[in-house]
Image (cartoon, rainbow, N blue to C red; front, side, top):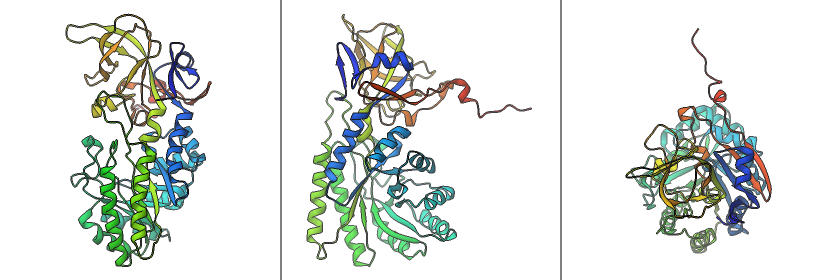
Length: 425
């Protein structure tokens, strides 16, 4: 996380000390680096330069309007999984013509909303969804552009909760059923078959599974072409991993190398085709764009020694950051202003009334109550998965731009949480 570094003994986001942010906006707070965000997106944009390619940022990773706006200004498209995420894209000034709509359970209302705004494509995941979309489009006098999300049954070798390309997963159309499903789609009167899509999982640290999936998609495109079903874009999904800093973890392949090998495979296939026909390539990265742009800033409330465990109790909790308790995810933890002295082994835990409320286990820290900690690489799947459990307001969000700090989401207060509720008369 090159944009988070110690300067004069204090952890900074770019040129801003995190202690200043805590003083001004309180804790817990999510702190993002603008420079890191733009640098991460540029890694994709640079690898795609000169090609017919579109980078569609996966909104589920972090959907703050300021982040969406910054990416839209850089030319990003967006991968959405709900009508609400589409409305966020529109509110931030994003182009709906660069929006891919994924997800297994699109409602009639969501389909109507997307068709009204002219999105680029629906990634359809079942035959019932094809029929529903055909009916909705027909009722509106429109034609819906569709891509089938094909499940290639490739093992992404990642956590089972974020693996999405195996037969046992709920996502996509089974590879063996894909040809018949494409025939069904092409026969429906209100659909335009325009693409093929896959997404085998998240936090991929090796490109071998993705290249294996690509080979299967290419094989299917050629088969479809022979039947007169012509594919105009190839959506290879997202899932490129990031380095969370755990000991022994394999570092991810750099984005440029990852995409370079993928493009080389596509170029070789195109050269072998008699028509040399070009196919637009679409990517759906999320975590690899935003994860290392952010930290969760939290203050220590108490240090609680025990016979078997010592606990560092902080004001952030599982409702602020679900990844550790949900996935058993390892998150780096750093003291904002490290102290001298022998460190103590702590579990870093929050105040929520659950034994699963922990952010980190077995961390060597030299700290005192009132000190600040930063949970590192927390820009993805932090705030978007946050909840109000225990009537806890969600954290503030700020973006740092050099030595300037911008509040991009106010902290929720308890009254905000029950404002929509009412009592019986």
